[in-house]
Image (cartoon, rainbow, N blue to C red):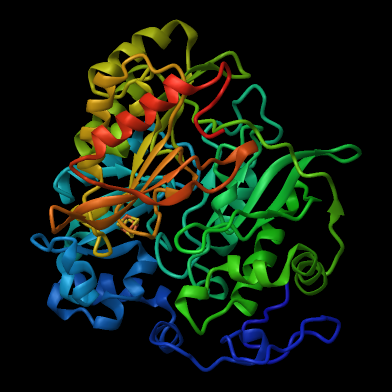
Length: 552
Ligand code: SF4
């Protein structure tokens, strides 16, 4: 793999014209930083902040932290200052980000699709209990996210994570963010190929690697060999999706350029076949293109999706093959898209005769205490372990058949249902105003109340309807691909600005992948949300044809 990080010109065989206007693309020699984020990354590799946290900041306290580390490089260690209490959504746009800073941190721990043993789940829970005021949310990037973390406690937390085989490195920042892996990798009866070895190799070779620690912006990865495309590959920067080549057998198609937020784009398929042992090289190629050709001038245009949109599939593939892999890829029809999403909730047979059990905390909110209780059950029932899902859920892997019903009952007792209502199963919420400095509205608590109310109003709903609640336009809980996507904003009510949402209706991934329609009139106050959704769902149920799904 050639290192092109500071190469002034791409190799001679590449047909990539130098753009007329500088976009800050390293490959064309634009290495002078064009904004303060780029400057900070050039001043010092963000990975170096780890040593300063351990040796200086944790000993001297919050006030000793260099501002460039605090609001920049800390993110590469999964640390993000949380929103100070007392600032409503109206302050988000009026104040600078640092004015909203609390002296506590959010800490994100990556799982990267790995099977978490009982010991690992217990370690995660105990960290929440001991250092995070008992917080521990399951995110839709398969992370555990804590709040109320003090910088003084970070070295001890990292030691405990390390002992459990876990890490927070590059969980945030302009870096290879936490990977999404199939929650049922290696055990699903209809799996095309198990992508676990590829995820492990990408992690081993490239996470914490300075050659891949300075991207134009975040870089999201997903790998699945499951036919249900259970990692939402449409919304990742790079996805490897299981497919079968008629001659070569199981492998992966490569999708690039997905991303939501503003100007959402679905990933495009390169229509290639990549064998398992070449996935890590292909990942490095795509990541290298992003690093070298990605736009660094404007943060708002720095995601890979903009480059993919400008280049198109053919040129992207050509540059990948010619410059980064130095070989041609094998063409292969892209795998068919599944209908709907596959969340693995409930009890399902594995290919080894055991069972997996998907359970649903409400909008991903758990606690340290609850994770410790879950670890107790994993140990007591001899379960192989747990995986986190891209839908803020948990899947227990390797349950003996004769223990399934007893385990399901015990899980239910601690609030982790394997047979949840539609609303608990299909509602997600981002962090929101409780802790996020970019938030405009409350999300987690609002969504929890919404779930409870809709369970009363539609207790027997017979078709899945997904609701994704987001606190701002950044779409961390995937606003645009839900049946009912909610984007937090202030709305007018009786002449006053109050918390509310812009509604996106009819979004989906899979076979019907598209973005929900955003109608100007579809704005609702947070207080009016229960009634709004009741009306939308009630009208759908009254008017639907026999097999009509909500997204259709
Ligand atoms: Fe924060 Fe906005 Fe992301 Fe929600 S969508 S977590 S409010 S940045």
